Length: 167
Image 1: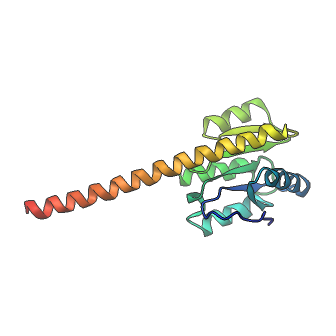
Image 2: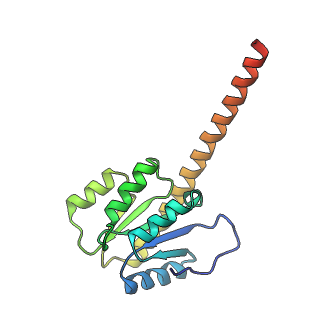
Image 3: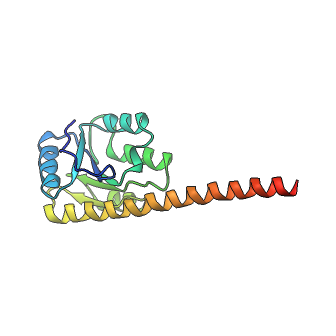
């Protein structure tokens, strides 16, 4: 697992890089770091899924997931399907990476909620631009989830207060 040095803010975005090819992962980590982005590398779908299961707060920090489609054992598609089942709103957008993509696979992933789909090799700047857009979208989704949770809490308090005053 490789991590670029953190910036000062606790809410600094994090890119979860899930790719079983070390050369690709190292190049992507360097590319993201050159644009000031921090990434955490996972060399398998299982390793990333273990993080998702171990840290319930993993998706409360703005970021995105760069997810290779074809990996040993647990594919990127399987990881994505599990993420969507767990949280259909998916606060951390997923960008698929593949060296073996086809149009139907890309269309299906996008229909299911993927943020984007890139074939390897890809244009570096275009990919990082989309990562930054995904992080902005993540901020928006997380803020919306927090607003919904705040409203739900307020409504529950109002309902309890109303029940006490009427009862």
